Image (tube, rainbow, N blue to C red):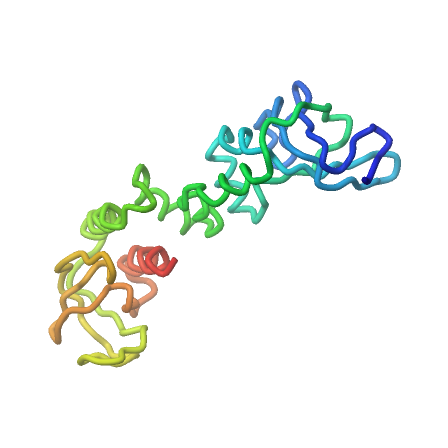
Length: 221
């Protein structure tokens, strides 16, 4: 078992001392956050501790911290702190508890990794259960009906196994016709109906481009 001068060992439970602020988000006080020691790094005369937060800390994390971490490409479930910022603690859960929580964390938090686009997607889906596909589609329908101006030109971006459309075909979108749990939002063209996720607005400068692209990114993920 790896040991270090402060007496902490890999696998020990530790708690953040009073008044300590998050090194990645200086406005956030992380006093009382608790986890397990994953690694010990000596830097000159100081000791840096890699911590994996326990499930209780993860459940009580501010959502904005999770979102900001994802946006910055950081793992919110871990953190590096100096040994003098930590103190020994009693274990409160198991590593299995941590894994179960991370598996169930709302998908909406992961959109933070897409920057501004992720934030727009989060706003559309605010308050909606991640597993309720139809409610999510209704939210997108309401959002797109507010943002889109019809008719608009697009191109078929996805390979078509059958039907009147081929990849690269230019089309004119006239309206949203229905919502389908498997194919998402269906739009009407002169030639027939097609899932919106299979289209791309041709003009990147069009005010329709961003809303449609946001929807397509969400649907693909």
